[in-house]
Image 1 (cartoon, rainbow, N blue to C red):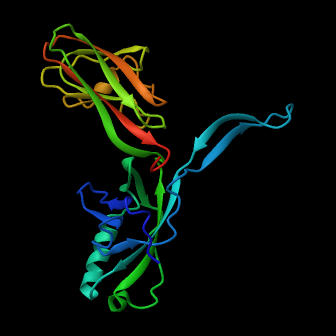
Image 2 (cartoon, rainbow, N blue to C red):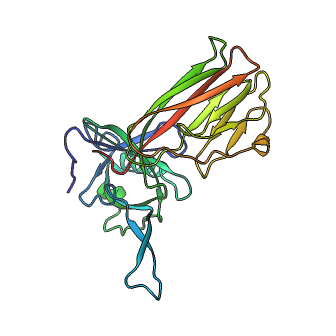
Image 3 (cartoon, rainbow, N blue to C red):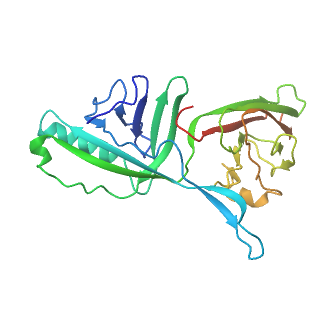
Length: 281
């Protein structure tokens, strides 16, 4: 049985290659691409958590240390249908080409009033669902797709704040908001100059290596990202005096300071991912 979440809820799967191709499984244009969501959608709302404990022989019970948020396991049953044999094969090919066991495909849920949020998913295993009837004859088949989301947070569009040294003071502030309820890692991009960035509001200042004219750079505090990337020197991160290790946690507005010398036209932009525990709410 096909199911729609609600009339104003949209669910799409996008191409892992970044081509922009997608299949809308639920929403105003469901079945436009020959595929529809079935009953049995699971795993999208709450990521599993594990309490990390210390159990000492001399103490009763256990001491909670932290909570580990595990990957999401998402079940997505889909029916693919076509007007004839060729149409079924075409729509089936389109859907399956969007998916990969080695790369993340964006799974997008859009609701009112929260807007679109997405999560990266990859095939846990290739579905091997039994053919009761040759689908080129029946023009219909159900795929019980199973995905893993190793980054368990839902995300919406990054918010940005830009500063330019137009006043020539060499000092400025970047004011930015975090609307999400999950930890977010600041990322800076900029151009030439001698930069010093405040890695967290009211926190330490990190000097960057000198950036030459025409050079652009990215400083990223995400623990799985390169701390510093440069268009002129791929090994520039080796020159960092101090790493970027701080994150933003909690909804609110934050102010980061920036300093620059050696360039009157210097610019810098701060980007903050908006991360959420749930696809809506």
